Image (cartoon, rainbow, N blue to C red; front, side, top):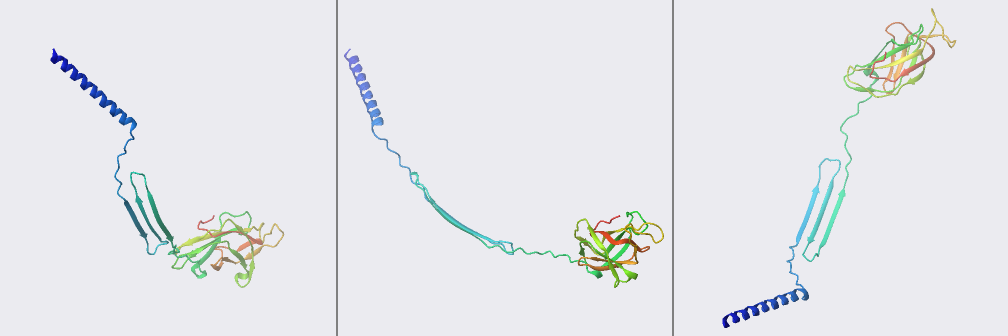
Length: 246
């Protein structure tokens, strides 16, 4: 009987002691300031770099240099320093392609024939002038022509015709043997025999024409058949073209 009582007392004492320890622990947790575990400082990291780019014979060059240092720790202390410099020294681009020259007068052979599409009447109406590159090198033609009637077929005795340009001019590149064309449309002669002009003027007849092109000289041409018969010494002219007109 005494042994049971002693055991009960001992158990009660142990329970009381445990409660006391638990209460002390709670008070310590709520009352005392918590200690922050120290976090080791992160190792400092240093990054530095330098980049240099140069290209020989390029249209430009650039040189870039830079450096940076970063230090970090758990206390959120950071310091950053950076310096950079950029310099550009452009170099003028070089042109390697050459420009095709204008056709010289001696590089061209000019011929003429009556156009299939022309105003109604009994004169020439319209003619096609063809230019062929007879040289060994490529050349270019561009623009509207000048036109003059050659009296008695002589270039020294010419009568300038008033030219009305038609269409836009574009550059035509002629390889050796290449051809280009333009069309001349005249004020048509009417009637039979010597004919007449609607304006009342007398028709003009020229055995040849002198046709000039910008930077390509002047060329005397005759029709493959007949002569140039027109009125009023006026002509509408297309620009020289790589497309053959009708």
